[in-house]
Image 1: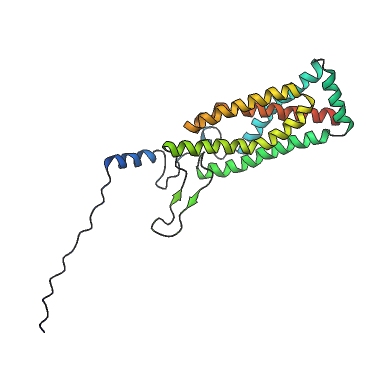
Image 2 (image 1 turned 180 degrees about the horizontal axis):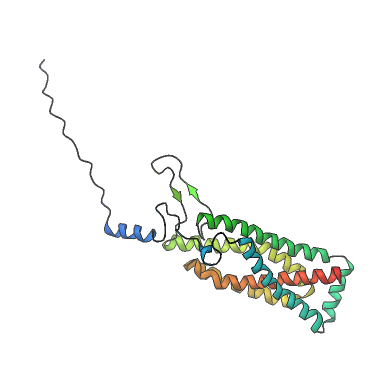
Length: 244
């Protein structure tokens, strides 16, 4: 049988995949302030403690300043108000030798801040800002080596930031509640007021966080002041009942 003539092979040009202009514009917007890998070009820490400044020093300053308000509040109640019940409870703490527990509680809160400073130091190095808490990498395939971060746009972004606000409250709440019980035994009315203000500040920060990570600052700072008040009061009660 005669073979059929083989037709010459024609080269086929690869077709171009053209993205709509709207998609290109959106991609450009998402990469504003970011490198080609999606990592931000600047750390949020650069505005208050750029490297090589120590975040351990910065966090210690904040902790001490906020706690001093609590020490002042405790001293004011103890020395300048006539509250026989409070003095009686101070004597109970002293009688049962519980003063060191209050000091240890204050120290534990300081350690918590130092762990935060340790995390912040590594965060500053990576330039990965809140609300991102982890850096994921794709292994294998066409996207091998690609970085995966949180979706910060639209409803997905609002959800991610709202979830982060809840998680942040959960991180601080256990130690706050322990302080609530210890200090509340001695000064229940003041601690109740501090707790309500703490809750309102956290709520304000959480609602603002949904819209923007930077908008959470005022609410969170107010809540840190409330925590500082109760931390400082714990230190004051511990020192008074242990050494005086």
